[in-house]
Image (cartoon, rainbow, N blue to C red; front, side, top):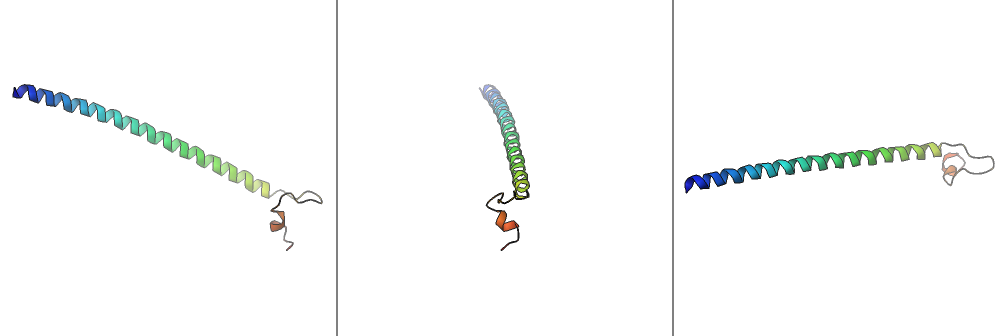
Length: 77
């Protein structure tokens, strides 16, 4: 009876190890996916900031303000 119990325990431990390896693989995949999403969000934010800064540097059109922020940058206070 004891041999059967050790055998069953070994099988249960092996199954548990396989399950843990699968879980570890899934977690690693999720981490990579989250890191990729964060990297993409950062890239998009940086691009948006570059576009915003580029738009703020445009010279005002003749006789008109190029944006509502222009009075802050033209030095006429």
